[in-house]
Length: 155
Image (cartoon, rainbow, N blue to C red; front, side, top):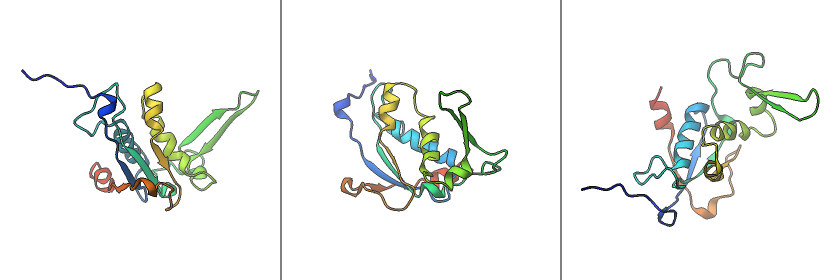
């Protein structure tokens, strides 16, 4: 009789991967990153244990948005409120990608695909996004992960 084994937190091995986001569609890239942060790509996946890997994303400013999502009038817009009267603010994805912090577009897309609980917030902490080609995680010796073949295969 085969029994299902449950992975314990001490048995989890976490690897480090570098992903180049140049020219990859935002949503498809974010879903693959969320899948790997959760650890669902591993055969030892356990829902109540953080089994995912650490992901370093470079060139986040070069992510691809299809259709009219870059359009200032009808595009992808992020809204937030400052908790002051009349404090509803918004920014479009095109303006944010051209602005000071372009990595926030990808970070927000991945965060919204993660579970909305303590474990999901802990898993999200293993994501490191950089707008340019340089990153400060060389000491962890990350391996290159080619998500372009996986993301483009879905098209």
